[in-house]
Structures are given as C-alpha cells and as structure tokens.
Image (cartoon, rainbow, N blue to C red; front, side, top):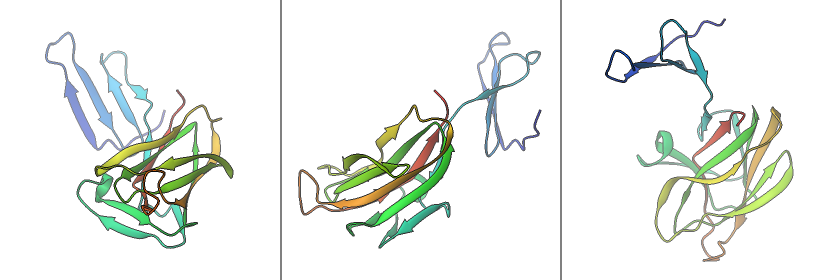
Length: 172
C-alpha cells in the first residue's frame, strides 16, 4: 500500500526451497519467504538516540563520546533534578543507559506518574544496558521522563545518570 525507500537488502538461507529476503527502510523492516506471497511487515522497536532533537533535556547534561555507546554518544548528568523527556507514540518503552562505578539513581516517570527508581551503579563499566522497560501501555501518545535522583544504593557518592537511547516498543 505504501512506497518505501529500501536502503538494505539481506538474503538468508542457502537452498532454493528455503530462501528468505529481508528489506529495510528507515522506518520499516520486511521479510519475504516466498516471492508469490509478497512481503510481511515485521514489528520492531524504533530507537531514539540520545542526541536526537526530540529528546528534551532540562538541567545540566553533557554529551560524552565513546565507541562502546549506541551511536557512539550518551548524555550524562550528576545534577540532582536534571531531567530528560521523550514524547512518543507507542505501546511500550525501553531506556538504554550505562551502568558503572559512577552510576547513581534515576527516577522514571511515564505520563507524569512516578513508576520506579533505577540504580545505575555497577562495579564494572556496562554500556548499552537495558535498565528499564515498560510494556502493555495503551498504543497512544505518552511521555517518559528520566530524572537524576542522587546517590546509588551501593555507593551514595556515585550520582551519575546516563541516557544512551530510548526504544519505542511495538504492540506485543
């Protein structure tokens, strides 16, 4: 029904009876297992990297570059009360961050309601960690806000909070 600008084709299989073709555009991923049956739209998360303009930062945040991060950057803050907000349309959300010895706590709000406090402390540096996810949201507009809370439960002097990316999740 819609035209898509395909940017990537991938072939998987190896026998003439079991070949699968994947096609990806900026917004969609398709699979074809039989040329006579057409294409199937695959549901997948939509990633919003930390540096996208759609994420609003309030308070003191710094952008840090390292190859280990998703898209090579994170936003980082140690300022209690600093916040990052994403307005999104979806049925679920995942927050990707870094856990580390500098990791503090962050408070997560969805649609302005407190959901939980997340402790980002780890003895090891753990980039691109799934630190929070919520599924089962009604498929409509939502907000997620991450607020820097303060010291970690494991080390009160560790107060860093990072935002690497948000994944907006499709219907389960």
